[in-house]
Structures are given as structure tokens and as C-alpha cells.
Image (cartoon, rainbow, N blue to C red; front, side, top):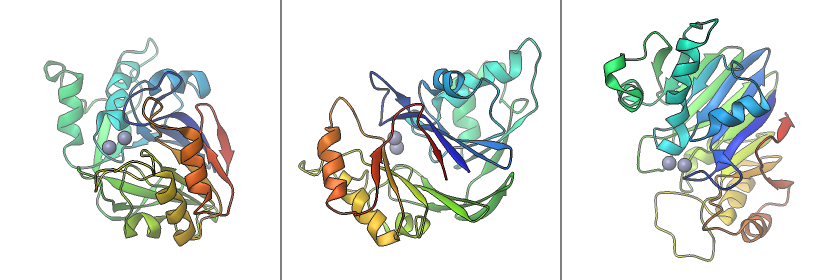
Length: 248
Ligand SMILES: [Zn+2]
Ligand SMILES: [Zn+2]
């Protein structure tokens, strides 16, 4: 299994990164895990315009889904298109939200996407076994565990610390975890994690490697977030960058 970071800026695009988008490849299948603002540009830079066989949206905040709307133009109007419909696994109302964002007068996107509503549980996406569960965020949000060929990638999505994300990351080879907030701030509950929270979750889960993502460059401190995570997790830690690839 291979993970390519396309975008990792939290909440809004940063000066050097699009918002959340991760390409997960296994057994010849390419799953776009979130498709946030600006990541269609990064898809072309680091993977290829058509390098997507399916899309999973953890939740419907703009920084995790808006470029799935932009991608409609690619699939529908390419000179050698239209391309085959893509499966989209997403929370309830993704169909309506994405159609509205694209522009309701041009149809409901059913010619481009085949929508599947996420619910807690396990499903097969291509050759990957994917388990999702509700995490602690103000809108319906799913953390994700992807298994293939005995290897495990866990993704926190956006969440405050919670048992569901710890379960999803149990024994993960790679735990891609958000760390939006600074440990030194008085952060609101029920929204996001700090670096310290991410490290603690990785330790509880027994994850092998921690990748920190969804930092907010304008408001955060990468070094403070890293240090806080390292104080709570003794394994290898990295703050991800656009274009970074990890063989899992
Ligand atoms: Zn977000
Ligand atoms: Zn969010």
C-alpha cells in the first residue's frame, strides 16, 4: 500500500499546501481519501489528472471535499471523456451538497459519481478493506482504517480525542492523525486534536508510526506540535508535506 500526500493544510489552504487530500494506492486501485480545497492541482503534480478510481470523503467540510466538485469538469468534459463514473463514499447528503456546490442547474452529478452513504462498519473498496467509524467533530465525520495485504493505514479525519479514533488506529503501521491545535492554547472541545493529543492517541492505539497532518500554518507552530507529539509517543513521527510518499 502506498500513501501520497496531496494536501495537508488544516481548515484552509496554506501558502505551500492544498487542504486535506491523500492518494492511497493498493493492488492497482487508487483511492482519494478526502479531496479538499486546492488538491486537484496537487493531484496533477504528484499523481496524474485521472489517477483516481474511487473517492472517500471523511466529512463535508469544504477543506475535505470541495475539489471533488471541481473534479466533475475533468470527468465530464475531458476531450477523451466522459470518463466512467467514480464511486464516492461519503456521509449523508454528500450528493445534495456537492451538486449544490457545483451548480444545481447542471444536474445532480449522477453521470460522474456513484454515491454510497457511509455508516459505521467495514466495506470493501477495490482490493482494500475499509473500516469507518464516527469521530468527534461538529458534523458527521468518519475516521478511517484501510487494510491491504496485512498492512494498515489509519486516518483520524478531523476529530477531538475519542475512543473511536484510538480503535481505528489499533496496531496501525501508519497513523495519519490531525494535529490542528496548539497544546499551549485553551482550545474549544469537540473539534480537533493537538500534537500532544495525536501522540497520546498513537500510544494508546499501539501505532507504529505517526504522521501529523491538518496543521494550520497561519495559526500554529510546527515545531511545538511536533515536540508535543514526541512527548506523548516514542515511535517515529513526521509532519507530512505535499508530495510526500510512504510505502506501508
Ligand atoms: Zn479539516
Ligand atoms: Zn472538519
